[in-house]
Amino acid sequence: TGEVVVRLGASPSSNPAVPALAVVALFFAVNWTGTRLSGASQMLFSALKGGALVAFVAVLLMQPGGAAAEPPAAAAAATGGILGTALALRVIFGTYAGWQDLALYCEELEKPGRSLPRAMLGGIALVTALYLLATLALYHVPAAARMAGSNLAAPDAAAIVFGARGDTLLTLFGVLSV
Image (cartoon, rainbow, N blue to C red):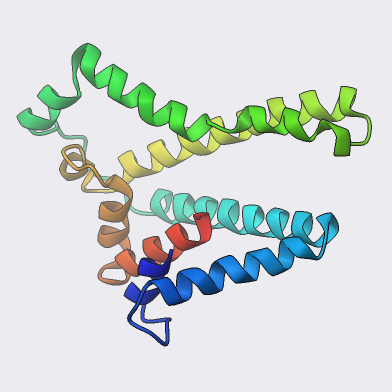
């Protein structure tokens, strides 16, 4: 986080440890106040992150659609077969990691027999929907064929849509996500 804050020019110091320590101290102070404020801050940051992702997807989907094109041969070879499937599943499992953590907080839930299944199934459904919408939006961008060979499709799409500001916007989203 510190390196990203320095990269954005939002730090009084060029040393990434300074903003990183400030962020840790800030969240320590918020969590020190108790579960009510720390829970509200987690909900706020999750809502901001989700809203930013939905807005990014909406902007990509509002772009004029590009012509479907075949991906470059190197990208097709790298993403095909069982190796490509295994690599894709690894990334997807990483995204879903943590859904089971909700079970650890059952003692703090009111009516956990009802709340826990709703939260778990709703969370899985929401993440799945966001994943599918983001993928659809990335394929909708006019230069989808160019992004087929990229390891960083979202920043590439942001650069296509927002120009030079795209990198900054995705960096801000990354900071918010962390």
